[in-house]
Amino acid sequence: MPPQVKIAIYPGTFDPITNGHLDIINRSSHMFDDVIVAVTENLAKKATFPIEERVAMIREAIAGLPRVSVESFDRLTVDFARQVGARYIVRGLRAVSDFEYELQMGMMNRQLAPDVETVFLVPAADYSFVSSSLVKDVIRLGGSVSGFVPPAVEKRLLERLAPLGK
Image (cartoon, rainbow, N blue to C red; front, side, top):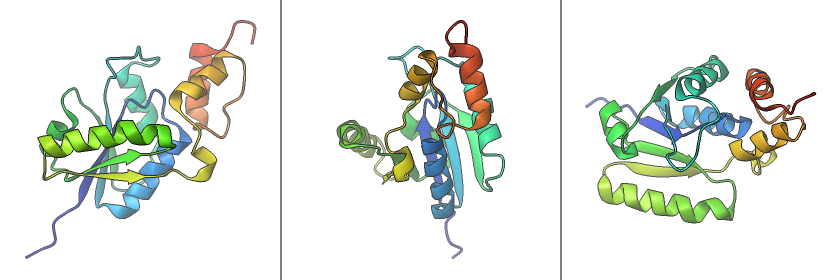
C-alpha cells in the first residue's frame, strides 16, 4: 500500500503575515508533503487588510517554498481541513499566553474531528515576541518593522498605517 500523503493546514488571519509565521510555514513544509496556509477572518477583530490582499501577500512571501499553497476559507477549521484532505492543523505558540487559547482550540477541534491532529510549533527565538498586532502598533507609532515582516508587507503596512508626516 502506498504511503498516505501528509497534508497540513496552517490556519490564521495573517493580518499581516510576519516572519514568525513564515518560520512556522517553512518548518512545516519540511514535516508534511503539502502545507496549505489557510486564511480566514477573525470575527472579533476588524482586519487591516481585506482577505484577498492577505492571500496575495502570503503568496508573494512563500513564492520560493515548494509544496506550500494559500487558500481562504470561511467555515470551521476542521471542516476546511477535511475538505482539502488535511489530517493535520499546524498552530504556532509564541508564549505561555498563547498556550491556553491554543489548547482550548486544539481540544475543541479534536472533539469535532478526532481524525485531525493539531501540531504545535514554536517559532525561532528571533520571532517569539512578534505578532501581527504588535507589528501594526509599531508602524502606527512611526517605528520600523524591518526584519519582522517581509519587505513587501512592510511597504503595504507603511502605505496603510504610517502616521501622517512620515
